[in-house]
Image (tube, rainbow, N blue to C red; front, side):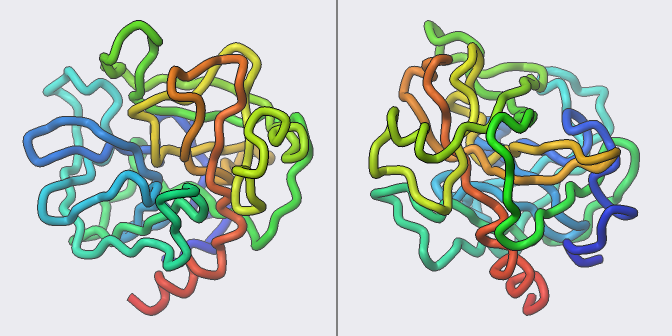
Length: 236
């Protein structure tokens, strides 16, 4: 299945349960999120620094404290970071993970749709981001159950009022209205619903160090990388 197989084969389920999965150390510590784009590939943030030798992907998890969930623990055969990734500016913050064996798709595990190249998105579009990141700015503790929040897209020129020239065309801004992505959410999705299809438009990248809910957070603009994603998936 290719990432472009839409909408029949992707994006039809709730964003909170089907395509976002935790990236963990082999000892079970959560550090980032990732989104399934087909049965063999997960997309995440480059700054998560996924290491196939020491990290795993857990498919189908909702409650990290539960041992009763039917999860698929997957190792990764290859982690391919975009060649233009810049760890100093956080530009082009995207990595593809090839699962060592295909995901078993079902009600709890389904791919999200990818956007077309350079998809134009309206300001104030209501989007959803999900993750197991910090929920309290006074605590380093990560969420036990998957959290979900709706955020508006912010125009880049408005975003630059907060962040200046750090903002590039490879980024999206969202939030600033009382909720925010936070540490531990990195690599996870920013999606929007079009009809009954959920499309991945952003990857949690960076933001205010204390997760200020009045400051928009920054997401990797997935449509900028659609051609690169298709190329990597087709070659491997």
